Amino acid sequence: MADTALAHGADHGAPHTTTGLSNNKLGMWIFLGSECLLFGGLISTYMLYKGRVSAGPQPDQIYDIPFTSVSSFVLLMSSLTMVLAVSAAHRRDDRNTNLWLTVTALLGATFVGGQVYEFTAFYREGLGFTTSLFGSSFYTLTGFHGVHVTVGIIMLMALVGMVRRNRIPGSKAETVELIGLYWHFVDIVWIVIFTLVYLIPS
Amino acid sequence: MSTVTEHAGHTDHSHDESHGASDKQYVVIALILAALTAIEVSTYYVDFGPLFMPTLFVLMAVKFVIVVSYFMHLKFDNKLFSYLFYTGLILAIAVYCGALATFKFFLQKG
Image 1 (cartoon, rainbow over the protein chains, first blue to last red):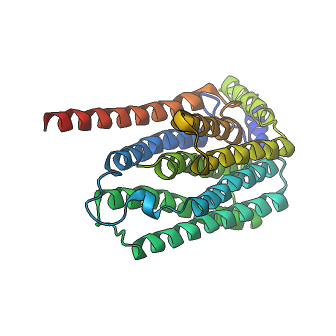
Image 2 (spheres, chains in turn blue, brown):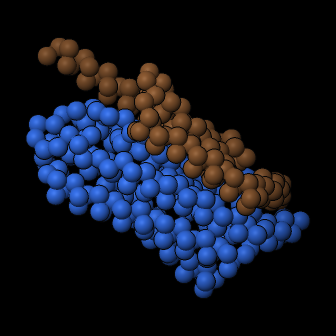
């Protein structure tokens, strides 16, 4: 009976845990909860220091809202392509899973490219990392977010390769879903940053 | 043991069914998010007066909840995941309030 149940579970990728929940998924949600604290601290620091400009440009003098709005839109749409990848993975449609994962990675790369351009433009306008408390907190916050997006892109590309070669151990759909949770988290952090950092003036 | 595995198997099955939103529904949700972003950006060009800050905060919160609930499936998933995530979020907000209060306190002292 137990063997039958185990075999049944293995066929459907069921988690054999006392909670009946996947430990991987549980771990990912705990990780995302702790990430809230990391970004909470960074956003708090920025909000406290954004008015401390001893030298260099003020926030509203350098922010390019139309440009950042397009970047935000790109990242938001990458959440759509990610959820479509998860949906395709649940249908065991490897072709569309890989397609949407690749599109998500490309949209993420576009966002990071935009951030690199923005940082370069700000530096040329006189805002270095140590220019002012505003500069330090701004680059730390948005830089940490950019690193998270970059890590997400690396995970997406690795996942594309693993799906293509059928090298994912355990449930393929769950693996795609876990990467998807991380990606959506990066998106919701940007939703907060875009409003608090860019749209609310100092 | 067999009870646990059978229970686990059942949970996973219902879990798969809970990801019921269709691709078309996801596209509609994305369009709603895009529209909300457009309203957010419009606050930069149009004078919202005293409604400026409340509008931005409400739109931010609505977008946040939509992504977490539908794209991250928290609305349909086990409540334990919601507790774990929102605990982190509430602690993060507490960190901000604590830091802000501390700075205000020291600034008033100085």
